[in-house]
Length: 76
Length: 326
Image 1 (cartoon, each protein chain N blue to C red):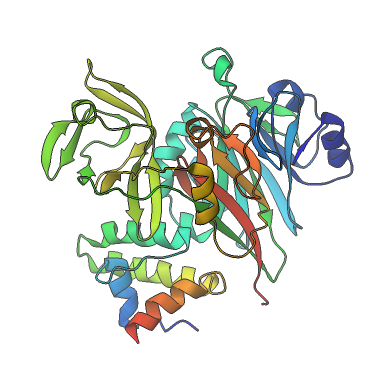
Image 2 (cartoon, rainbow over the protein chains, first blue to last red):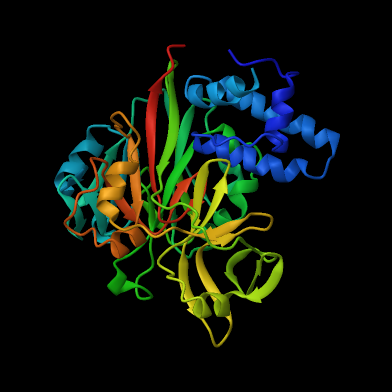
């Protein structure tokens, strides 16, 4: 189970405040793009990125098992 | 697997959905059906690297609950993502150096929602002796049409309980050299920033005696993305690349790979991979002399560029179908 969208780790992930080395190709590409997009500091962009990354992890939870353990294990 | 024309024709006629790679003279004679294809004479087969204009590489599509084949010109490639099924994958083939190739390479990383739907594919090419003489082509098996300017995609919807997963095997890691970044984006660049200082990129490569068989490598949060060198023109002061470089991305020249075949085996993910589709890069094939050599058990066409969501270079790319149990 991934944590809810309001969990602080999602913002840290898309802003690159914690550096993760992700195994999944789309996860790595997506998070890298989001780091560049959220660099502007625009709150609406941050919300959009969190919505998108959350939706991605929710949809592909089985495939992303290792990355989920890496990200949320580190935060726990 | 690499098979003869008659075998492919018979599978098409029996209603199988196929992803094909081979010579134009073979693909253009195939019966109509649920298939797409692209031209290339280089393959990684079970026996090793093979060059052939007489055989076709066939990848059988997984069980589908729906499929759609569509053309995409340079201006409507962005439709690829909304056209893709919610659960499934899209396999796209694009002719090398075509407007669609350039457009996809530059713009795909920015397509809305691109990472939410698995997209795999490859860049069609020709025998190196035919470069500039024959254009690479892609085929729509449903209509029998071909194109040297548009991309063809097969969108495949997977049944409930299955998901598509795209992986890569990239032997290259960032080397210990300087961080390089670019103020101009594209396949051809004049300058780069080295530690924030602008220098001519061609001059930098020549004066540093940098081996341009090694790609530029960017670390995308753990996914290593290569940009390979096509040529360095010291007189004009320009560097041509096989994929575009992007602004705000940090690149380094790759660490040299001593033994490609051994490194390949060592880099393969643990456990057995049985890809529904895979492709490897012509530059790996050439630089590592892979003709006649086996690189693990993964087979597929050897291509002029690989697509795992965005355009990649010098990277083996594969598609797996995973049981989600849901």
